[in-house]
Picture 1 (cartoon, each protein chain N blue to C red):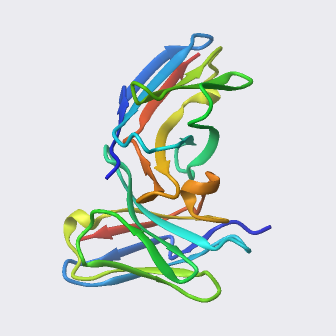
Picture 2: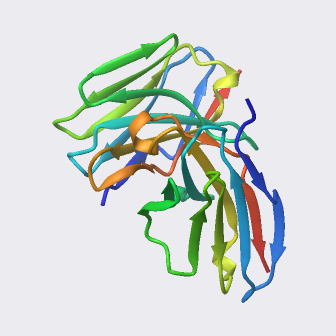
Length: 115
Length: 114
């Protein structure tokens, strides 16, 4: 069974640009969650999508958005990039809502550098 | 919303010693508490979890304890080995409530010295 796939793995952008990250969950998983990982801040929850609907949202500005398609693939978008957006963005999939069944299966992440 | 505090942020032990990482949570409705291990350059992976109807759970050298009254839970690793070196994250969630998603602590970097 293929794992969670994230693309691109690495990208460099400049301030003010926008970026779109993609996540393909494990086949059969309906929930996709996004987390931002930075040194010292751990894993900060961005949002969760389940059956194409945003189920929960973390405390991030409106520049961060996402969506989920009918095949459960998800994208997240960050507009008007700031230096502080430099981070590893992790996507995780699960059968049901991540808090229900517990195990989140993480992708390898997309490392974003904003110059 | 839920807030999870994790201590210590770094922990160094000698091989064979025990390691304990502690977390506290704020939402008394939280009912699920997993622990994830992230080795350097790799993705986080679930190592053990506990639900609110259980006080302790063991899996070989690792165990987790939960104190619902005090709203804290801990990870215990016995007979540590160099391969236990990693960043460990605790998390909490309240499925069915307002915060079904997992909220993570900031992590503990464990170093096991041979």
